[in-house]
Length: 149
Image (cartoon, rainbow, N blue to C red):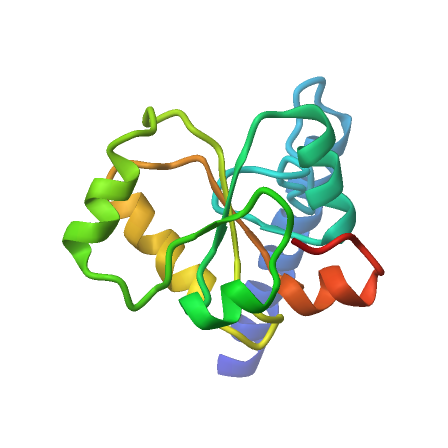
C-alpha cells in the first residue's frame, strides 16, 4: 500500500512538472528554461575580446592591482596602478577624483591571481558599482602580443 502511494505521488509530481514546462513554453511571456544573463554586466569578468570591445567603445579607467614594482616593469597602456596592498585611505583618496558612475576595469597578473577581484569588492563597498575584472590580466595581454607601456 505504502509503495503505491509513493508511486502515485511521484507520478503527480512528474505530471505537474511536465505540465508547467509545457505551459511555460507556450505562454506569450514565458520564462526561459535556462537563464541567460545579459552579455556583460557590472561585476562580471571580461576576457581579452570583451576588454578590447570596452576599450574601443567606452571611456573606462583601467586599474592594475599589482605591486608598484610589477606595474613599473610593464602594464596595459593607460592603466593606473592601485595595488591591493595600498591603505584604505590611499584608495579612498584615489577614488575621490572619480564620479560613482565611472566604469573601472581591474586586472592583475593572470587568471590565477585574486588581487583584482578583491580590489573590485573594495570598490563596490566604497560605492563604485560599475566594475569589471579582466581575468586574463597582464599575462594574457602580453601573450596576445598587445602593446605594453
